[in-house]
Image 1 (tube, rainbow, N blue to C red):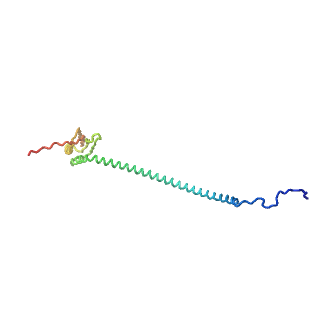
Image 2 (image 1 turned 90 degrees about the vertical axis):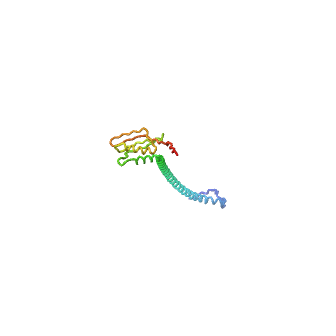
Length: 194
């Protein structure tokens, strides 16, 4: 086949380097692009590592805070229990201190018992309204009232007077109830003649 003779315009010039080459600074752009991608990957992985470490630290701090809260609550419970024991001990101490005046009375009653008699029940109570009055309820195992008279003599020796006494004797038991009031007025001393 034969090419017909045609005139073809060639727009290409024969000159070399028709466009000037890129400056050196612009040649660094692709290098910087790939370096920035590498730095981004490295920084992203560092971020994710630090993020996971931060989550682990947060979880450990939450666990520590939970254990500290549990210890605090346990300490509060122990303190409340200790305060309750202190209150009980204080109540017992105040009861013992308030019963101290009754101790000589109880000792006098128990020492007045003869070998043939026994105390079956003894109740001493005071009302908060009038603590100077003592309510006495005693049940003595005896057949005679002489034991009660002996006990009342011992009580009178401690300067107590009995008001509204009631006694019941039956089946070898003597029930006695009375209100005891301390006689604080001492009789005037008699003057001896010289």
